[in-house]
Length: 229
Ligand code: DC
Image 1 (tube, protein in one colour):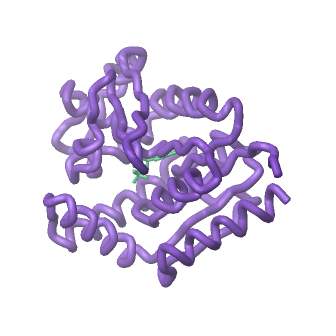
Image 2 (image 1 turned 135 degrees about the vertical axis):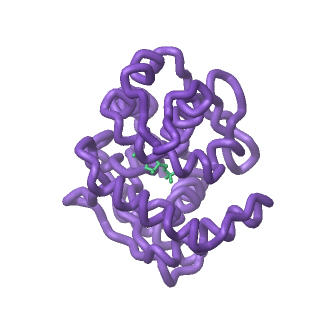
């Protein structure tokens, strides 16, 4: 049976596992997957490389706003995943570093950055058939998404997941530092003036602290099936 194509918005806290869930659902149902956090990370890397972020994480907003037109972000399918391209360069590994993680929240709080990326994200979803994850997808980018999911887990669970990820990549960081980064980002993401992280009124909440990846996958499929009927 051919279902109508919908938009699936998956928002939630950092390292809540939402990207993995979103990517797997997209692949299962033949939708395009977009990791909007990767786009904020790519802009952050650009700003870091061009000396637009001070040691205290203050952003040279005027310069960054002026440079936004020079930033192109694309995704390159790569096996079961995809790589982020910044002006054609594969920056997938670099945007996941602790340095980028430490600078990304102040960059994501810049209204000009949000406007530029929101516009690009809406264009990506103009034909629907997309799963996008982030912080403001169900509230700001696609308030009309047919299925909205808000993923949450305790800060400790999420820091442990991030810590394991960094170790697996061969770039370990002390657990306490990772936990502090997770908490700091939660705070900045929730309290920023522009599109703060919050659950859309019509989003379904999933606390996956105690769920296996397989349980999360089947829960997601169930929500999708219920939505498309
Ligand atoms: O999901 P992530 O940890 O890769 O996201 C990186 C940062 O980008 C995070 O601190 C919040 C920000 N972000 C955002 O503000 N809006 C989005 N739609 C996605 C991410």
